[in-house]
Length: 315
Image 1 (cartoon, rainbow, N blue to C red):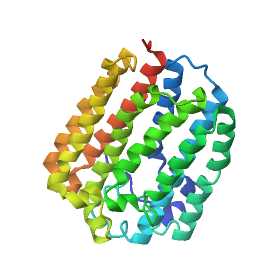
Image 2 (image 1 turned 90 degrees about the horizontal axis):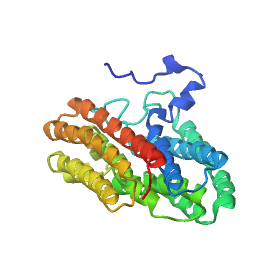
Image 3 (image 1 turned 45 degrees about the vertical axis):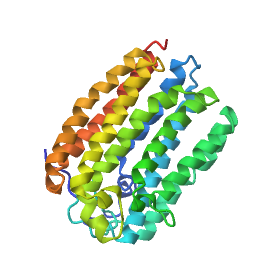
Image 4 (image 1 turned 30 degrees about the vertical axis):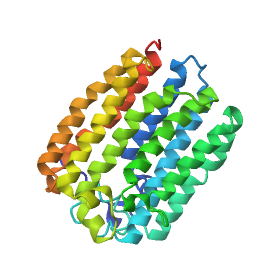
């Protein structure tokens, strides 16, 4: 199946659709999955389901992710990382290309990113009023991570800390969605969320291989740039192994329903992707199948985990 073509001014013109597609909506599914895991974790522990708060949680978590995506494009344009990326695999790596291809200006992109993030603050305050002040801390931590991932002075991704930031951010999504329902901190969303958050981090990690040359040219010292492709290729397998090991441990210790073990079956996809990465780490053009498998493994793991939490018996 051929990959979609990059955006161009001729294709979009002044269409409002360009604002939506600039958020890279195809990647927002991991945030939906994270929210569903958190909601299901609360339900699994017998917390009554609040539909209104659940919908608001999901909508504004998606807005926050979309805003972070757009601001990441903006800062990668400022640094020159996306412009220098000639080995990208669109639409998976190398940014949305809306700035580089002249569909949106840098200024328009920055405005869009902040316009998406600003409404998240009052929504978070409203949700915290119904659940507790702990949600403010979760939300602030998430927003800081989303900003610090690519923005100066921290630029976590440029310091080899992008995977840690992403794993922490998606664990916060799970914990935050649970907190909105529960009104307190609990272990269940952590037990359920760590494996998923690590797989999301692995999606970022594998995307850095096609981007490696462009990132290095722009001074963006990602973990893959620092380690080099030959050493970094083993990191993917290590992250996946820890993710699935964590899930099996939590099920084995009865911190999660036994049915949640079904989510570990996605290791077949992750390990297949790891094998492809080991074979083609220095051949970016051949990494599309591994990236697709990683996306599938991450999303399927999250949705299966949410479903088994929601309908499995927590003993």
